[in-house]
Length: 430
Image 1 (cartoon, helix red, strand yellow):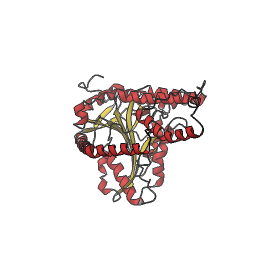
Image 2 (cartoon, rainbow, N blue to C red):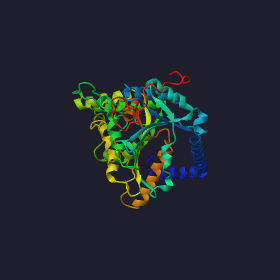
Image 3 (cartoon, rainbow, N blue to C red):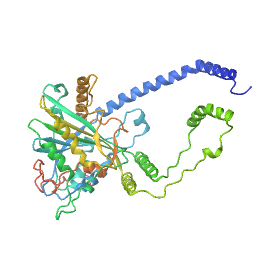
Image 4 (cartoon, one colour):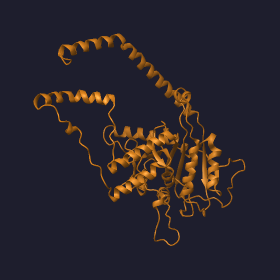
């Protein structure tokens, strides 16, 4: 009698059912304990995040500040020092979450403010880095401007459009950065500030209207950066035609055997065994890459070869009830197209969060829910989950948010008095 005899299979199934009925309660108990532990851990994480205190800092710099976004890029790199790897007790029992901070633009009619929301315990560290890169900056603590619009008054006294901005492709592909903004024909100032167009668009609004932009940044561990870098290298190998297929695991081999068995038996019964040469085809490797492929691989290598940060972006437009116009919603998205590249990466509104997204079933109810969620997430600077968000480099972050320099001539930018904001003596040395 062969192993695949029908009576033998029935006997094996009967023995498996007996074992399952005898010891299956262990699986039920284990599953229940796992659910209870997950719920406990989520509650502890909520308590941990609720206990974090943030400080709201407004930063202004003089009009003739010579620093370019390169200074902000260096600041982002140094601010990565707030990262701390949790120990086992913190990770699995105390609900520890990695620290984060936000860089924000609060825009009203003909005025923009540069705001940073930082953990209070790291306030002096952030101030020290800012003064180190911008010695003449003025930093002062302010109130949270977002709390002026309670969610209970949504669609009663004010209305809003909002969304999170996400990457179109994987985060190993870079967006356009400030290095690409240069006018080769200009005689004096060749650099073009990419933030200038965004500020002009967000401040050219009516009285009572607001535009908010929020960039959340979370430093990550070296192991996460290495994993991200490996993904980039795998993509480079794929483009170059040097993909090395990983050997399948035990589960994959078992599944492949079970699914291929009927076909193998039928093939053996009708045509004889399969030839080994059919399964050992060697794919030829490519000997060269096209110029666009070379540009893509170079850009990926430049991005994943640097430190990365978990990031999220939110944009919100607020207007009095009845005065929320569609052109302003289009403006909120259109200003980010300047950071797009057709062959690398682009920014787009997240289909799951944009408030004008639902168009069919319970449209108004779902839109109202999304408005409330995006407003609360903005107000609480929500960055739930250590693995959420996309990876970006300090260069990309400095492109999206940097303090104005002499290249930014917008009258909406509030300027500091030159030389007034020197660093306090008690700030740490950076």
